[in-house]
Image (cartoon, rainbow, N blue to C red):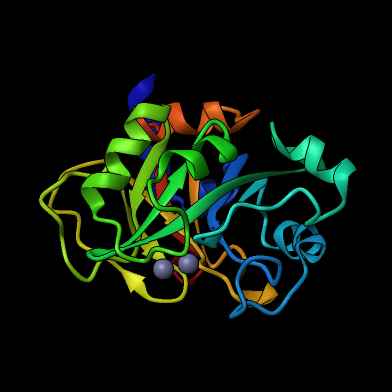
Length: 220
Ligand SMILES: [Zn+2]
Ligand SMILES: [Zn+2]
């Protein structure tokens, strides 16, 4: 039985494309990334057009502040909020001396508190970020690597919608994210799950267990 499911996945790309749980794990918005050019409230429209069931907003060194979308939206954002049926979650892209690390914490405020020296700093090491992630029970993903640090991340960004495909020398689980800075980029690369994701904890667990696979629009 298991074999036939696996075979089907290899034969038909449309089976992959129609997977019910497709998440873009790497999206920027104009709220937290000066280099991005759209409002987070534009995301659902583009995400759903791209066939996504969820997105994770990962601003550069920035966790969404309470006033980013107004208090009501922020209250809901703690556990992810559903905007027109799209699950929106929050992580952060942390700059380190060895490249960017995407961190998905159970609680974004906890992450901000756990990184010593605050976010004026751009010289964290991957070691420091991994230690903080492990303390918090967060997922840490090496984003679009140009170097491969000795400290092994929990997962690696195999496909980045803006920058292409990346080698995974660690043998850790692989994910995809668009790194979208423009709305039409949302969903250009993504991560698929067989199991439903209701909140950030589900996402953290499934990626750490390797129950996910990366994909990208150009391969469909
Ligand atoms: Zn980056
Ligand atoms: Zn990015």
